[in-house]
Length: 316
Ligand code: CP
Ligand code: NVA
Image (cartoon, rainbow, N blue to C red; front, side):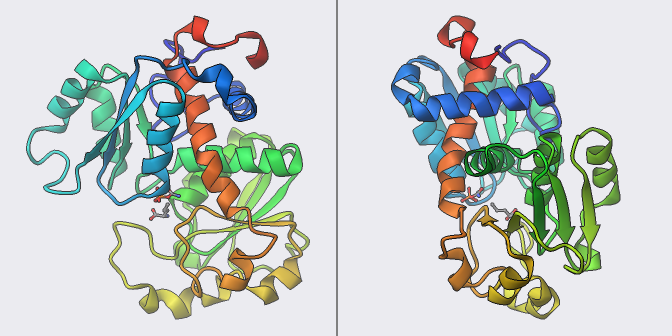
């Protein structure tokens, strides 16, 4: 199948993907990772603009190198100074980029910016992180879990720390694929109940909030992310005491007995996770980083490739 001209014009919250489309992205990612030589022309002649209002290592490099591997190109637009929408309106920016590029991949401070870009662009807009969601990360995480466990159905995942953009997107895609996700956070850092309700109503798996780890063991996977996300200038030291009970450390690993530990990176050692654990055999963080490229390439292929550039049979 191809997602081009289908019901997926944009990927903003991530919920635009149906279960079949999500499974197709993961299947194509595995195929492209196994036989990259077969896909060197999949996006030949295509260009994407990658726009950043916030810093990045993994997202920036994986989109750039990923497009090159598919025969296309990615342009890096650093819009941190003076800021997106300052020199010209967001509407004009989106309309102009649509003249030259086949998609706009944007990392923005506010989700509303993506909505405005999508409203005025005539090419797909893909969210590469905003204040509320990080769907590209969640695609890579589900790819990693598929490789590690053979699939997500029935997996028990505990997310520990701050309920944020990474948590929301992980909940959505993992639960669509049948996993159960419990987010363990301080009460004022919990994922909003509207999102939990939405995911629970639209997924095979279940998602929930908790304030401690009691009764959760054993779990298959523990996931964490920074306690302070980009856009919030609070020093980590200032939130340390509040979040320390949610740190992934030796004691927590011994009590929950997970088979794997995940982190989207960048890692803040000694805060959300200890060096001993992020550097241990349990850690999947570099596999997650590597899979950003394959998950995104599969998504871009399905959204942008001409139908005859993709092998239809392996996706059905
Ligand atoms: N995980 C992630 O999105 O990393 P970057 O912020 O480095 O892109
Ligand atoms: N929650 C983090 C993720 C970084 C990849 C942030 O938004 O800064």
